[in-house]
Image (cartoon, rainbow, N blue to C red; front, side, top):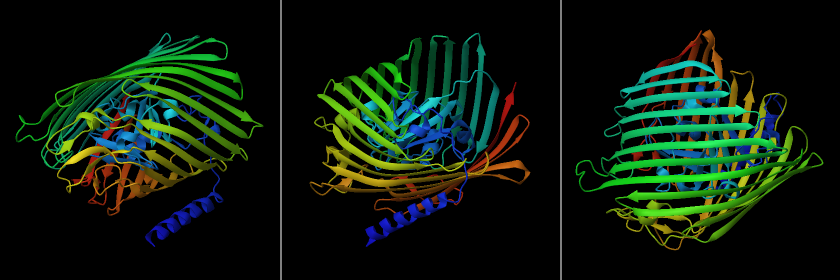
Length: 603
């Protein structure tokens, strides 16, 4: 009976969204190029996948102070945060585990080989980001391992020239936040740099933090193409009380990220894109500060890689890419030992449009992992455009993930890794529709099914006394996603989002699951931006989540801002209703949190 009520509610909500479409006259940027949904980089109107785009203007107005906060508002994305301001958190998509989401920065994979708990250690501030593209569903045929639930691509800004931007704010729990950003250009070279430091005494014992980041990006442009060099640094020191166990812990991470990206246009109808990158991540974790000499873990990891792509325009309607990628992950750890995994891949993709209505896209990728066998991962996407405003689409793809070093080798009194773990594999299927009406209206609706094998989870057979990493067997996830956007003016818009996830699985024996089954069954959010009297801009975000076997909760966040000349005053309130809730099991989320400050520009 409960399942029937859930299905009826879903159908009702979807119907409301569809009915709403008939009464709106709105606009959307159909010619915007999207780089994550396909290596071919189609325009928005030609997308054959479910993709969400969050641009820089929206990022600056949302009640959010980190990438984690931004992602948590998005349909089908669940971020289990350990505190505010992006100090630590796990990203899940479409009912996936946090290890099954691939994170890219400017198209480069940065997933942490030790554990995906560190995937949000990204040395970019919100002021450094041009936009965030979120691809829902499989992505292994394009980007390789971990892309089960989806792919998140964080695309950095490249401004030619901007005034000096300074921001300063203060808030509850001793919060102090200061940032500076500047960009300039000269004779074909443009460069930008940002520095940010934020610290807090913490919202409860042993949750204080001190976070410093630096990011710089330089671009050289000529008639033959572009060359972009970027470097980022993040120093994140924080209290980790109950983050990973029932003890007052401490963690200190340092991230260095360097990349060089080229684009050569000297060959007719062909663009050559080379990339090389290096990520260094250091992690020091003290499990119990009362006895720091007993459990201290020091990990140093290097992820180095390169990619070479040839982007070919066969005709205006036919495009293809071929490419190769090499990535090496290395770790030196006092707890996990010293290990190395290398990966070599080749991939290709082809897209075509027939009769201006039928769109097809085929992809294939072959991956060789040094500790595993060769795997081939195909994808097929197709769509039919009924009109300029309405199309339907479908997609199928193979996905995979190799175990992390923690899952393989970690061991303490409460947790044991498993060196005999097998890679996760699966097939993902989805269908969807996109409808645009008039000038500022957008509707998306999607259904999906993901069939997974050899899923890895941390399980306990003794009521949580000890956890073991194991392949738990087959887990199938199915769900729907609906998005409605209505924009009246530039400052005024309304988002309505709903996602539903359900699973069935082959349970080989009784156990408690630590991660795999903590996804939201129901996820509903409303975002609204309006200009209030006295030209005060407001942004409200309401989120409702109902996790499997847990109570639902509702959280409201708000942001108010007013600009006068070159100064912007703002007030941000997180958890307005002071809701008591848990994103991470056993760890209370922060109480109501006020932050106010100014942002000003100096020419």
